[in-house]
Image 1 (tube, rainbow, N blue to C red):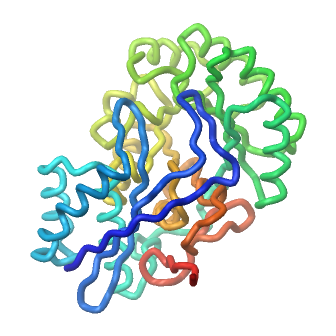
Image 2: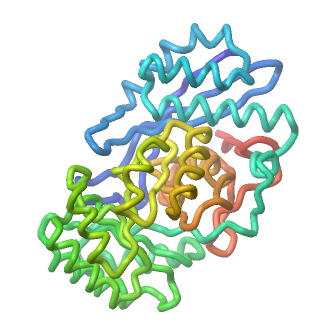
Image 3: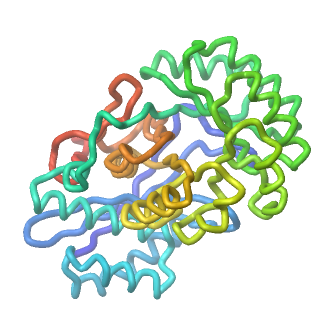
Length: 349
């Protein structure tokens, strides 16, 4: 098979600020796997989490090194390919792009969308949240108004963990709720921006605001504190940066209620499925998230969406120059189509 690599830059409509910084644009990588007249597509996007920094340059370098080796593989050799990539420490985002492309190729070869190949039911897909980053209260209100005009919003994720402290978090959320319709599903993500005392205070306060759950309230290193918060919080606790793959799940099962699975963290749809099963085995709930992914990567995750309790696949909705067309928003839900494979096409230049 042949492996082709191309970079593309995407720009956010609204720069996203979290506890660790602000992102306005990223350069992602489009990967194409070709064999037998069929081309499968995948995407890698750079990210930084839990001390893992995967830059565009590192992703491209890894993929370029793999391209000559790929000629000896068939797109159906997924186990062999995955083993090779893991043994050679290929960044998870690069592995994700290849794995998604191989699944897309398989679906196109079979003439079926991935959700159909997996026997999943699209009506089970829950609404995807849209994200409001850390902002001054008035800007947060404007963001809510803008999102409500852009797309049929049924769920809202609010980034807290403001470096200025929890009073700034409270002021922002209070202002934001004055704009949000009362029936919106509301969740909070602190990106590890609180200490234990702050997290306990905020979880109790957020419970009075009808927040559904709190994501990554504590830093990754605060494992013992996470177990304590688990017993003290009136709200379910999910983790993101603390959980990369299925191997992380057992060690979290006694201190969280759910995990956030992202393509770029886990390394592809194959590992995403393993992580879902591991979480379900341990009685944990599952949500899907994203980084600065385009429609290509978020469509890939939407095919697994019938297995998720919560979805946060909104990054492509915040792009002003997304090159791809795939899953579409229907009544607040990101729904894959009936085309073979991922069902993703590219905008004509």
